[in-house]
Length: 538
Image 1 (tube, one colour):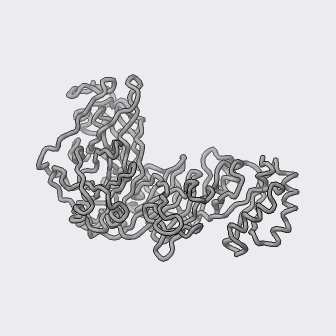
Image 2: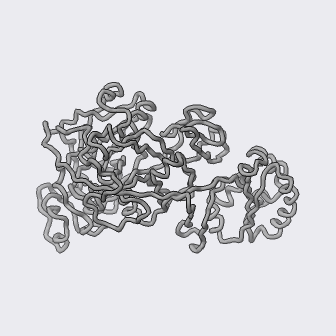
Image 3: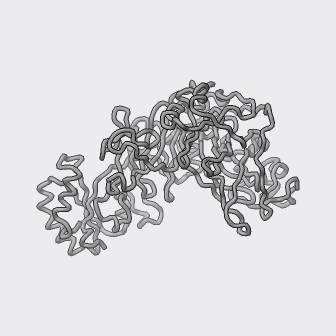
């Protein structure tokens, strides 16, 4: 029940867009070459409570016949534990045939500029103020880099068949006997599931799905790695925003054709994914269409690059959290031309929270972004924002938006691992209530997000989708108003009377439509609320 102080909840409206995504792909993998040196492997400290003795052969059991070929002879782990059917996993190469990097070396921007072109993609991450770039031209040939940034053990990973660049925290919970945390080192199994890289940890030799960070077979089955926000952006954007950043060196100890793409033409929409065997891909998009996937609080949404290219910015709500997806041209596809630097411009996309901390002076109101003349700006202050979410000019210059974990995928990959996900589609703008949120029958053909002027305690947040208001299970009175609307002022006493009579059974919602009717500003709306004060049902 709304209190008299909360009364009718007046909202500032933000229309939510939804968009469709698509994908297709298909070339073969070039076998890795022999190393020029033998890179030093980091010391491995097995956990005696979980790790089999190296060199031993697992005892025969009924499940061994179902394992992917050579798994029982190449790996020492408890394969009786697994969370996915083994027939979904295919053997392509032998264990470590694609060698992970375990002793990565880093160089400065100026030195890396000698061999990185401006539009080449890099996997960028920033941890505790230190920014690092892992060029895709190197990741293409190694797929995993075991690293440490500011004391945080990380694995920078890239699966070229799915275009998934993901950075993980390598720390997981230790066994119940040992307690605390343990740090894992990762290698490549040579296996694929739904064409996605299956990694393994060297401590227990459990198998991990790169697309999700979940252990799917072996001793640690069921554990999940923490994903650290990262982005696939152009080298030009990285060096511009992080002039003091560090870059993975080409001096890896391995002889590889860094800069060459062994998957030439793979992201051609007319092609099919290489060795894909899995759920049927929805035909909303080509199988290898690029999408940016976001998952928050149990809701997953895919944002197609083609749609992002048209809009530049998307304001949305995912899992009840207001987010924005930025897109910017200038990043080459790593999977198009034979030379990565010459790939088609596919752009880059990143996701951020639209809420800034209280220091920004926005009273907790989520920002609304738009794409104007090639610039990303917020409507509240006119500040311009970079592709990495930093205010670069305007009153919020220097402020940093909080990154939301988002992962690039091809459509076939995203839909295989997230079959229940929503596909952003501004044409249909269809919204489905989250599971467990009121009556599952409730759905809107056109939903919209509302930002609260007040009443946050009643609805549990500063921003909410109208479908979630309906999902409260009460009748809703929806009133449209504007701060300088004389008719709106005249009807306020009637609304107040209705609220006082029915407020314990009915939700009263007011939507400020001033952006569409030109009757006042946000400040005029707030002034009207203050004028009527606690005596009104807002």
